[in-house]
Length: 269
Image 1: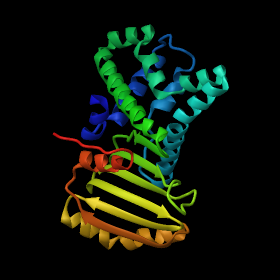
Image 2 (image 1 turned 45 degrees about the vertical axis):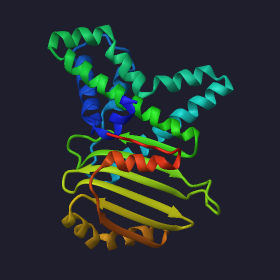
Image 3 (image 1 turned 90 degrees about the vertical axis):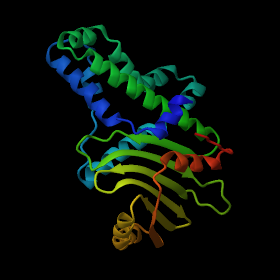
Image 4 (image 1 turned 180 degrees about the vertical axis):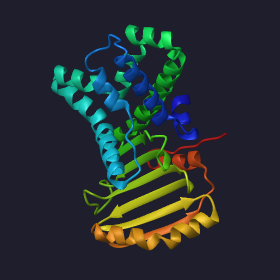
C-alpha cells in the first residue's frame, strides 16, 4: 500500500534515475568493466530520450505505451501457452529485471566502489524499482476492466517534468465503439505547473478538459483552446470540445476519484 500510495502522492524522479543508471553503466563499459554483452543494449533502453519536439515526444510515448500495454497481457498469454522460452525472453527485457541485474552485478559494483558512485547508483536503482513496482500493482486493475497505467521517464531538459497516464477502455458501456476511451494525463510542467487533463472519445466525438492551479493559466488555456479544437477536428473528431477550469492541485484526490469506477474507494489523511 505504501508503494502504491507514494506513486500518486509523491512526484518521482524516474527519468533522472534511469539516466543515472544508464550513464554510470556506460562509463563502466567504457572503462572495460566485464559486463554482459547485452549491457550496451540495456543502456539504450534505460536512457530517456529528449522530448523537446513533437516527433520525439510521440516516439517516446509510443515506445512506453507499447512496453506498458504488452507486459502483463503478454506474460499471461505466454504462461498459458506454455511457451517458456518466449516468456523468459520477455521477462529479460523488463526494465525492472534489467535494473535488478545491473544493481547486483559484481563487476559493475566493483567499478562503482572505485569511483565513489556506488551509493548514488544503488539509491537510484531502488527508487526505479519502487516506482515500477507501484505501476505494476496499479495495472492489476486491468484484470477488472480495460485499464492501463504508466509513468513516463521524463528527461531533465523536458518541458514536461513528470507525467503519469491513465487509459480506460469504454467497451463495456452501452453502444460503445471499440476505440472509445477516457485518457487522463497527470502532468507537471515547467511553465504551466501541475495540470490534470482528461480526454474522452465517444462514438467519434471528443471532449477535453484542462484543469490548472491558477486562474491566469485557465485563461491562457482557454485562449488557445481553438488550436486544439482545430487539431482534433483534423484528426477526424466531430465537434470537439476543449475547456479549462480551476483546480486545487490535489493529485491524490483526483486519482482516487478515478479509481471509483472500479470499486468504492475511501481515503483519509
